[in-house]
Length: 169
Image (tube, rainbow, N blue to C red; front, side, top):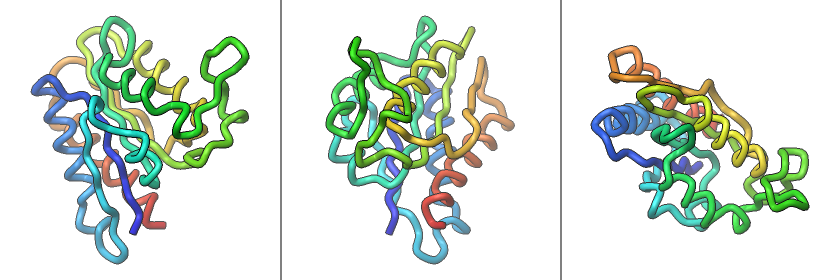
């Protein structure tokens, strides 16, 4: 059975609502029919390199804070990056996907973000790191500014279901 790791930082009602929908989507009955997908949910401060290595795909959720991903998600990447096959260039910055040869390279991921003003820097920072890991984007990034409405909840459900479905193929 394939395994999907959901790593999130959900300190607000808005992020919790999006997380709930992502998880519900990953458990969608159509996706789970047949071989199914094991869904593992970890707060970013608790997720480990072992969790990442055991998973076949990833969903990442973060707030957008001061133009960057949350400190919790950054900690997750900082504490697992080299252990899970990340590559660094000679300056110590994340390399690009062409350099990524670790055991997690090529695995699909999805990303959702929530913020009040701007998501650009947060999205770019996550994409830089997952690019250095060689992960491949499995679905459109879900970026939500302001209140989480029905459309955002539906999009979060679809994100979870889509990444989980990719693991059943």
